[in-house]
Length: 391
Image (cartoon, rainbow, N blue to C red):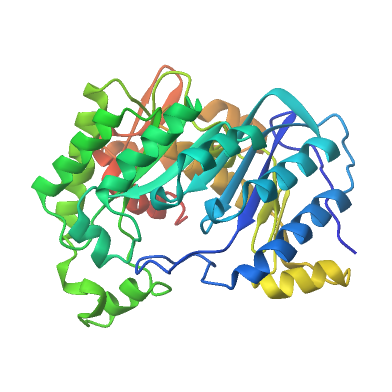
């Protein structure tokens, strides 16, 4: 039996919906997500399965209002607009939704046309997140991206003409063949396009990606020997901080910047440990005390929906210690930091023995009742979190 119990044990009376679309045109060399290239024949039955899953979701807290929908992947922009409208419509009809509902669609630049942009608006999408990654064609080609720099400008033009006023764009520091000059040019071109929101990610070397596995094995396929050094990536990140601050963007999370009023409301739910519920293959959910996820293979997912079979492959009730650790490292990912006294009261604990040594090392700083990562230590946040959670 499919079971979704919305237990309002988190900090918010609103909830978010994540819809996973695991289909891609090609697998990027650095990707470690549970996505892949599947036959378009699977698209329609997959969308039907997602709609069915949404419609089967029982509610134990009918007062919970959905105020964000995030359609991610994969490349959800590969789907027909009617398919997107069907999934968004299922959420609207099954859940209570807020008047200011934020509906985000992830899209690759080369998939965007003027006609599609208009149809997305009609389907209910009001925010588009573009996987730009770089404005340098050599970097894009080496990483297996399908688009080129010119496609990004064309995508922005189509979206703006269709009336989109909330666009997010991603860049990756550490793409193969990236240099300080090409990075600066990517920042300059993105700044000129003026998206409302920007994400800057450091290239991840992960064994689950083709590129990561090649780097870790010392090979040279996938341009593995052309990745900038860790120090170069850190320099690129710090340069982005300078450029985006000068352009009026608010740095609100380690990897995210937004113009005033344009922070990602959906992603904030993750960092604030608010409730969110996932639909689709590999989608994750969190009700404030429990996490679970769906099976990852889209064919198996569709079959499970059609046969009313087992859908979840992981289900975990968090211990108080796990919840506390999440409060700390997710809270410290946000530039505003954490209110230590509130967390101590919530968990009946004393955090000073854990935080004081990090403050003494200059890794954390406290001011006006808040503790945050030191601004000069954002590039080594993972190391700080590892030390914080090692006790």
